[in-house]
Length: 140
Image (cartoon, rainbow, N blue to C red; front, side):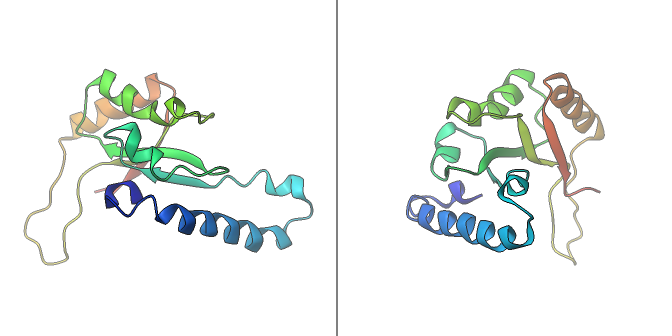
């Protein structure tokens, strides 16, 4: 989620490229041949308010995804967010890497922020209707 970092995000692209390269170097020796490595998909995730969030940290060879909460039930907005990586030239499936089911708190917090379950159900249904992949995040 580096895009939410603000002004230093463009500088961090070098850091992200180094992470990508280090990951490839670390994984490659354990693979029988380079074709095996092509099956390993590296992903990144960023907020989905605008394409500039994702574009700030977009690097070659890493699949871009977005994340956003399940309290959003506007089908058009969900579709807009999921299509941001495609608008930036990415190919592949639409994916919400973190479909938030609620929000986290600290261990001793008395409140436990939750989204209404019917909102989660509608958001999941919309993702499925659009053919999008998703991970439920901060499950309760």
